[in-house]
Image (cartoon, rainbow, N blue to C red; front, side, top):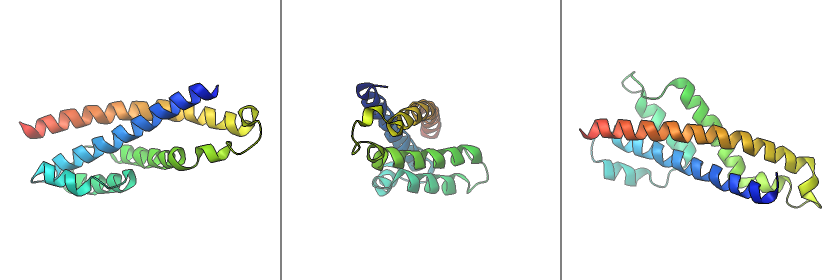
Length: 139
């Protein structure tokens, strides 16, 4: 993968991670009893990892979770991947000479392609859950 394509896939991947984070925040704010806007304001600065834990706890209070245990496990895994992309990926290769030809860069390209597709699918699913769930609460 050339670096221009890498940067595009990277940007799209980070966009999906941000969408997932905010979909989780919206689901949480709507799930919590009371003022949705107040609940959203309270969690606005929480990280993705913090929000996954908070939503899982709230979601399981009634023993009828909206999101399955397996899906929470998957969300935790993509949270770890998000941290890699946000904080470490370029350090894997950018400071090395001729890095575009190095196996470290190629390894990150392969990982990015895989993660991009996984997080895109997860984002689409969570967006649908958010829309359907929040609509059902507002009726």
